[in-house]
Length: 470
Image (cartoon, rainbow, N blue to C red; front, top):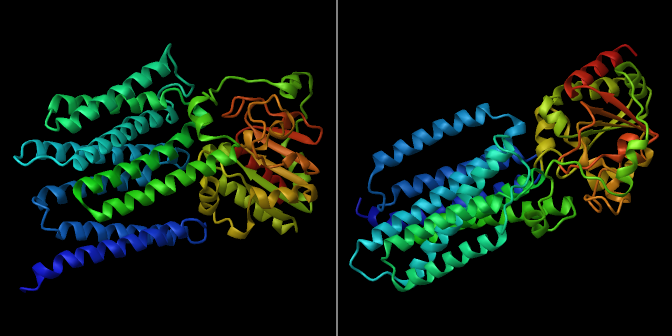
């Protein structure tokens, strides 16, 4: 057994290397719906290996407390995962981001408390790392909690601003930098350190406060990146390679996802953070402002079923309304009935349909929709000219032609699913309310558009019933 003290450090580092490789492979496989489950499992195995390796590290002083924390956290996580609705997934991601940021900040606080009670001098690089971990972790914690509260509807989703907000933010940030410089020179000043912790928490709130409801999912993705950076910074504080690597992976993947979402909306990250877009207020511009003079065409489920049943090709466009109504199983049944009649059925997925990329894919996979029937925006748009009927279920901004034709619209330039090019379009919607962007949808007033008013699940069920009779 004498070889164990020599082998253990090497074994721990090899375990960390194995876990890192599993994380990378898992992330790669999460890029496709067909391999996502396997990728998630591999990443989970990697995390298990990392946890076990860390517990074998002799630096762990109290196994009882660690195991108790793991048991409590695992139980809470399992319950949350079972109970969370798919429509609330962005909120849950935001909440978990916040917990990750808080954990990283607490690691930095604990490390600071340990070093100030020591007799040795505190290295400058260690002080800077602790400060960065506190800043990023604190902003991530309170910013993510506020994003959760906004998406959950506990407070208004509209941008919240106050006079001289930006100068106040800049003053706080300058104060943090000044305090950081002072702490580097005098690293055992507890009061200054606590002030920095407080400022970082306030900055997180002020960071998310002016963000509009439509952009909150983008900010959650950005905060996800921050949580990774906070974990990586905590890894440098603890000199733990696993934390550094996994944090860097989360940070990189989070910023890539943020960029994907911004690109899907044809907006920059600075525009998302500072434009107060998506307040939920009605915005009119250009052609969108003239829709009040146009007429809507409505149909009932029987007429809609005839249009769908006698079509050669149908493209189904799911949106947030379908997710809220949990109508994915009814949609799958409708597609099955149409295919029974010889109709070619495809699904068009916009990158930001729902609230986050992949939202619609997961919902449809839950209903066992075949992966080959799911088409990304770039692949399906050329098909609409040859489509008999486009069936829009609860989508709004992502099918608004104003993004293509109205230079005065706030969403002008945003890539959309061009359902208005189909021979006919059926839109299932509860009413005429605006989407997250707060703009009226020109599609509803097009000559080829038919409105089917009602809840998504109920209307699709009625379509299924009527199609069965054809």
